[in-house]
Amino acid sequence: MDIPLSLAGTFGEIRSDHYHTGIDIRTDGKEGLTVRAVAKGYISRIVVSPYGYGNAVYITHADGYVTLYGHLSRFNRAITNYVKSKQYAQEKYQQDINVPPGQFNVNQGDTIAFSGSTGAAEGPHLHFEIRDAKNEDPINPLLAGYKVVDNLAPIIKGIALYPLNDSSSINGSHQPLYIKAGKINNRYVIAANTTIHAYGSIGVGISCYDIAEGTDNRNGPYIKILKDNNDTIYYSRMDELSFATMRFINGHIDYAAMHSRIDTIEYSFLQDNDKLNIYKKIVNRGRINCKISKNHAMEYVISDYNGNTSTLAFTILGEEKKPPIYHDTAKYLAIANWREPFNYEDKGIKIQIPAGALFNTMHFHYSMDTLRSNTEISPIYNIQNENTPLAINYTLMIKPKPDLSDSIMKKAIVVRLEGDRKVSIGGTWSNGYMTVHPKNFGRYAIMLDIYRPVIKPVNIFKGKDMAHDKEIAFEVSDNLSGVKYFRGTVDGKWILMEFNPKNNYVYYTFDEHVGKGAHHLRLVVSDEVGNTSVYTTEFTR
Ligand SMILES: [Zn+2]
Image 1 (tube, rainbow, N blue to C red):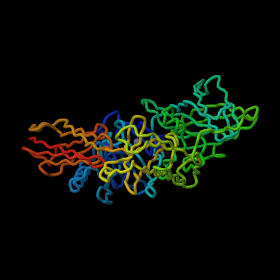
Image 2 (tube, protein in one colour; image 1 turned 30 degrees about the vertical axis):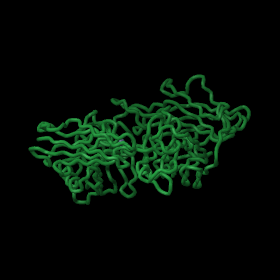
Image 3 (cartoon, rainbow, N blue to C red; image 1 turned 90 degrees about the vertical axis):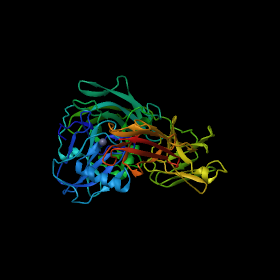
Image 4 (cartoon, rainbow, N blue to C red; image 1 turned 60 degrees about the vertical axis):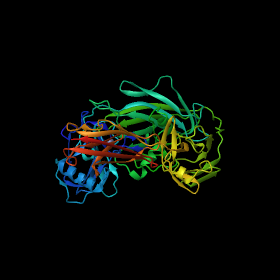
């Protein structure tokens, strides 16, 4: 880009269910800034999508790396024409094109596209990523030598302490202890009047973020070190990540605290099941063994990529006498060992958790609520607890109430209930069960989607002269299963309609495919279960 490098997001930042695998480059809150190739190579992949990285370009370089440029508003003219010819040939808006070498060769500094906010971007920025061409794994782009203006040290918000088994305790309790941090004379300290007494195997976690001049963004620090009596027991550095083990992030954070939006706390110890590749040094899996009357002088050292560093020192005091062993009195149905596949079956439900999906061995339970509305056709099942994390999806099979015809079941989907929100996760109907593969525990039920999607014209009406309009836009929505399919035609011929899920707009930008004169427009929209709405009208141009 043609502006100084300022980041709205760093590599390895903690996001929901994944790490951020690139850097987010600020674009002054604007779209349409020139995006240039960072080095010589050829364009190897082009993606057009309303989700994820949105419109994206991948360049393969001779030195074994691939660079990725995401959330683009548009491509350069040659790529735009290439993509559009594919879209019209296939009558398909979304594209994921593997481009053969030699089609688009680029030199360093060539304009490939213009920045935007397409896909999952919350605002305008450029997502830039470097991947190893061999295994597609992402590498911290700052390792390539790009200089970021940042002379400010990371902020430490607080720490948390966790008893890790039934015989360990913190301040006499089996619950985690959360402590806020403050700054005195350039060093972080824990809140005054806080003492930490511990016994047995415990772990520590930290809430921290990095800041830089000229931006409000809270970015992820680069290095996190925890020392116990001056010995490093935990050292993580965000140099590379692996897409294959990405979801192990869920076991490396205080999932319950993040899920209930209390705070983002990262553990400085490992769960029983941990496959992340961010650890450079780890002693006793980062677990601290607290003995009677033995103190631990702890210190966190947190640095950003430029080496600006913050420290936080605190002391863990050994208990004076052994505390009682904790007894979990909560009811459970079975023990699910994280190393082994776990299967559970009851009257209307089957659950299959694959080996390695859980982070620790756990007490399994589920509960059942009765029907509350006539859109539900099964009880609501509360599987385990929405605050229990998973590294791999499991299989959930739910039986609907009896005697429903196959034609009714065509309208059925499994819905995840998140507070008042209903999130469709689809499902297949076979052998008397609806089967889904959720990535979360929590509340699930089968529901019927019997309503068609709604099509609301935004700027068109019957007989309108659209000579001065740039586009034709509609707002589309669906009550439950979601808009799955749309198709627009003018005078019977397919037109390129795009979809923006942020405002639910389906829109066509006028181009050479619609000329002057009177035209007939037809838009068909279907939801996940096939309920279909059709809108037709006439306009002139
Ligand atoms: Zn990004």
